[in-house]
Image (tube, rainbow, N blue to C red):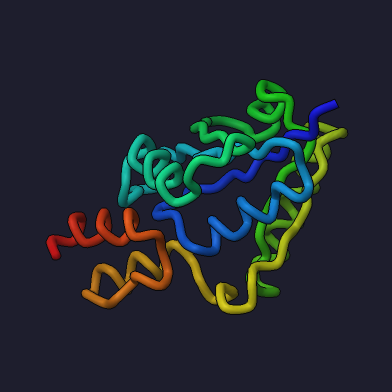
Length: 160
């Protein structure tokens, strides 16, 4: 039986922290589906297709990782792709309450879908997409925080 993990998120933009969790998820599953959520209530910096392309560039050629977008309930996406676990990162205690509520709701809606929480690498604990966007918007150097393709896309987006 193939264990399929789903790593959902907005990935706007993908960061080195996302890359770290994707690679570490491979130790828990036979296949990882990186699922870019389309959320009509948010105004993303990058369109979904570009976020998928940036993720592919950042992760490289790993045959056990696939990239898809989804809208609607994560549990329905999990059923569609045969996912048995959801991978989420916890950077700080402040992340826990929201993630805990989501995990419990997902379990209620899909009783066999497990949620696994991973703690990021120590040097990536503070990193978030919103922080990267803000630094890039203000002209700061994000090269150590994101893949070079992402840094280039941010520079273009902000006219640098």
